[in-house]
Image (cartoon, rainbow, N blue to C red; front, side, top):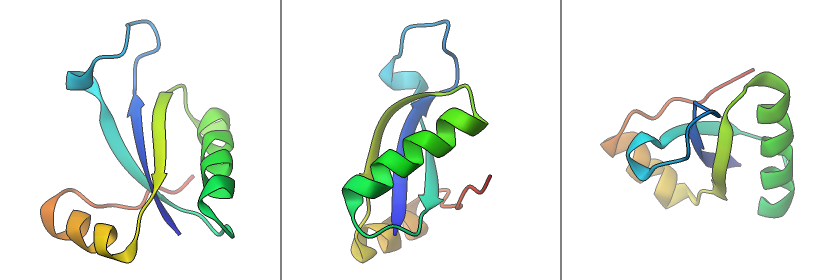
Length: 76
């Protein structure tokens, strides 16, 4: 399942919508809740980012993001 992660790169500044960034993770999980937990664990181990929100994407949402943005799966 593909997950969209909204995050801030800088922990020392308060989060602002204007500085929110996005990455995509492809996680082998059974459901969205397990993916959110796994995604947070992976990001905590590999980055210093402040994770704001993680959401599981439907196939239609993935197709939309692929067509309309910088869609690239992040791997660690």
